[in-house]
Amino acid sequence: MADREWSTVDVEDVAALTAVYGGNPARWPADRRAAAVRALAMDGAAHELVVNEARLDALLSMVAEPEISAARVDSVVAGALARLDAVTAPAAKAAPRKLDTFLPSPFDLVRTALSWLSVRAPQAGWLAGATAAGILVGVMTMPSATLPATETATAQAGATVETAQADVTDMPSLLFTSYTVETHAR
Amino acid sequence: MDESVQPPPRVGTAAASAAAPYAGNPAGTLTGLGPEPGDDALLARIAQGDRQAFALLAARHAPKAMKLAQRVLGNAADADEVVQEAMLRVWTGAKNWIPDGRARFSTWLHRVVVNLCVDRRRRPAFAGLEGIPEPPDPTPSAVNVMARQQTAKLVSQALAELPERQRLAVTLCYYEERSAADAAQILSLSVSAVESLLARARRALRVRLSGVVQDTGEV
Image: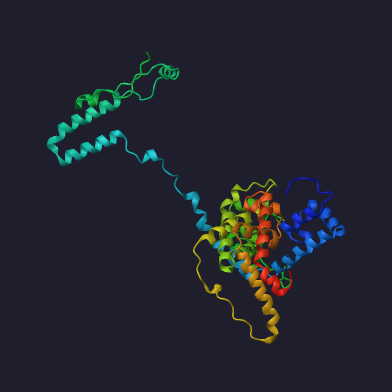
């Protein structure tokens, strides 16, 4: 119902009021109760509306109220008290680990691979060592994939950007050639 | 409301005695608080782990919460479980309670109860003994009582068939005698939305109970 002053109400207001709150003025909102009760005394149609809704109220009131015995209340409270220790536990829980703590570092991977090879294929130890060293050097010398600030500004300004993919033809070039995106402002 | 309503239950005696051993206070009274400590004061004590304050607050609010839960669920055992669960949330959430006067504890508790009831109603129902109707009383003097019970059963059925939010709005505003503003807070809705639910619920009930109206001539 829209906000307004309820100094006077008409039969339509009473109809809207009773359709929501029923025929018992005690249930009507306080801000419009007095005016609505005055309208009942003066308007027979409004009075009839209230009587009709009060009949439905009478039917609804026939549903028995749930009986809540003292024993039931005590049982619920005592049961809750008995379970307090179980719900107090959260403070003792360990803090959740971050995702990155679960992921191995590249060095861990290399170390694991080397130890696996030394066990499974000792004769391939030198080859494995050289390969691992190559990968390590490649990772450490890899330039950043993000554009430097000046280049980013140029690119955003509309300069033509040329993207070149490294021409990878063999294993050493795969390991040592930078294959990240390069940009050149013309 | 039903005129044959039982008097308000005597509560808190067993709960207080249950709390006393935890608090180390055999008398069952809360030291440092008056004879009738307010909800906010009790919640502050509960936040510090005071079990006796918890027992007092739970015993104070459990009867209304149980009545609400039983109206929504239609089952005493489920209602008791829901209220117990809600009370445990009071225990774990007391430290977050801000006594700024804007929110009443009972409104917050009823919101928790309503949400737990809604969750429980969505679970598959277990057909327990409580679903079996009681045998009718065969004595002739019980005819009027039986007719009234039959009507009450039809009304209960009509209420149960309402959409969930309409039923909750009727339960809160009609049976629990909450204002529309309170019901709006409990249901996390606007006042106008609650009023709309109430109006639709009453329209639906009038249609569903039209047979009862014709039989009884009451409506």
